[in-house]
Length: 413
Image (tube, rainbow, N blue to C red; front, side, top):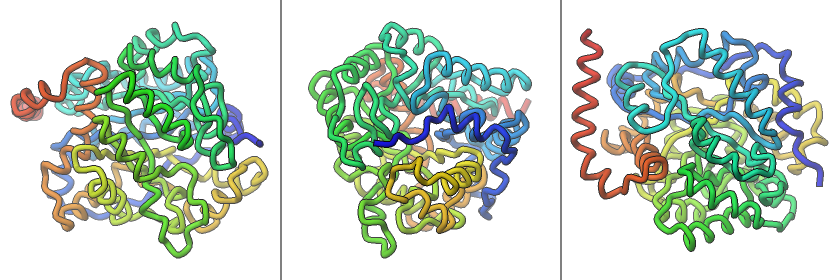
């Protein structure tokens, strides 16, 4: 089986591109919706490794300045994917920290939900580290507590392809039946031990089921999540949908099991995964459709949001179109790109409009507070800090009241 080209190689290829996500459309929204976003804890998740998503320091600053200006509290930021080694992970961490050090005082490096609350109150950006691969361990489980100390919040075991941990979504799409391996499950046990969230995005259904079975049996009550995965069920009846669907999208059953564990599912506002639709510009209605589908499927307490933004998909689109033989997905990605799906919905530019759309559909403010960040905060506090959902619920009213008071004091200074 041909592997999807390693992200570290793509990073080198894309280093000459200078696009940022300026091509992402800004959607009009009411002042009420803009204020609601600013008043609410909003947690995004984006895939923007240095050299691919952003290639110049100004790209990163411009993107995060827009996010802060719109009221986005923070993001789960991807440091590694595919087959990154530990040294490559450290280099990626350095690139992020180096550029953030140019504007000191604008970032909060998250270790607990109090850090997220602090970022919200003070208008800073909450930085939540994610790894979309377990290859950064270099075969050494002892690195996991060290990664926890570095602030790693969540980890995916197998990004798309076949790895020592098991088969990813693209591998299983092409018929691989490895599933999760013993090595993969040993990593799961260590992630649970040290309070790192098990992220099931981009893994194949067999690997996903094996991990969920293991978690339910050996770690009952510990939630697992899909940080950025679209619902396959939303697109299966679209007239132009491909016969096998997008290999990254997840089944209803997978989403339901994540919710049953206490976790959450977050759709990604990435156009090429929208099987058969592939819009030129993803609309607030498209995003609301994804959110609404998951809410109806698993309940409002188990849904989040995630752009999975790479600042721009143009370099990726150009490379895939020029080298389709390197992407063993039956031509799915090329077809999506040719149909126009060459972007993402940057949260700063689209979330207020999504808010207006969800209000039209009958969503209440308390629902949106959960979807935009509250559900993630609950899982974060449970996994990172060991605080039970029952205790969280008992403390919730006091925490919300205190946040509002402190935010008002800070803004009136």
